[in-house]
Image 1 (cartoon, rainbow, N blue to C red):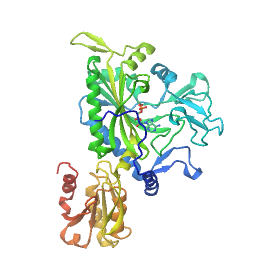
Image 2 (image 1 turned 90 degrees about the vertical axis):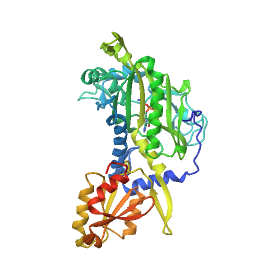
Image 3 (image 1 turned 180 degrees about the vertical axis):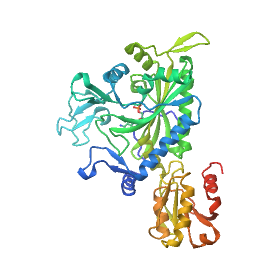
Length: 447
Ligand code: GAP
């Protein structure tokens, strides 16, 4: 783990990479600009057939590591719409803002802390006074658009865990240290959404609030830094493209006493993937005071009643998916031909196995469909009969499919198929009856 200074962007020397990823995402159906037939809609994006699988795989990998494989973390799926009282108590109505300035020359609007005093549009250095711009989306619930009907789209999933703290405590009988995890959409009216899906106004978060006895907060903070850092490495982010950066005091959010970001080396420099914060007892205390409900933990053994401290690993699912794509992108040569390949870990690849009948001839179809049917319960599969086999391999390489299974005329005689590995391009013959176990073995699962 590194302890780096506040980021001055370090360009990676591959500025063209962003453009390649954005093009690939559009061309192959990962991410489309939203409402494109009407000219698009301000940095919003739709996830296509491959993108939706990959995003789901990223969220599932997170859920597996944070909830399924642990006995101290439970899940939650809270409402996106919430009343002002929640955001009043949490401090977001007062504090969740960015400094907004207008350029006096071209009248464009910017986040003052992101532009170094120079207008990125016209180069002017003259701006209005900076003013606080609240990032929450405000709407009205019901037919009346009056003050009493105001509701907010959540800007973080975290508050759902705090307002349900007692419900979860009482229904699960958990005791600190324990966590509540949630994956879902959040909304922020960002002044300058940018860098494709890196900063958008609608995005998905993967957050966990880990409630601990106050005296143990520092130790759990360190624990979650290490856990979360290794999650990215395990799923294939190269060690030299990821680091931890501890926040300076003046960078901390209004609720935090310590925060460290997991940062990725994006084409424009180091930037945040996830924040791990010590939120202290700020939120539970604030909601207790505002609601009149006692959101404390009562320890029956010691007779002690206290507000747990909270350690929060908060990651962005959409942003993380983009980092996985950037890290996996490669161009190499196979058999003297250039190819584009995504070296994605099989767990997050949008298609995990492609079944490719060698020829369009109908005689191959029953066997190929039998193979597909065997694989589908275990893997996201694609079935492709178009084009030459070489072209089809290239198409699968380009979207990161780890294994292609080719059914040919010999398969009808020997009941075996050819398995091709994306990274080595090595091909081996495997009996159809042993195919699922072979691929489960290769993917590191039991046979
Ligand atoms: N509950 C704490 C919290 O929300 P945050 O650092 O503001 O902390 C957590 O957000 C993560 O959510 C970020 O590290 C980032 O990955 C993601 N995120 C935040 N704003 C985003 C945006 N506008 N677009 C995409 N992802 C965003």
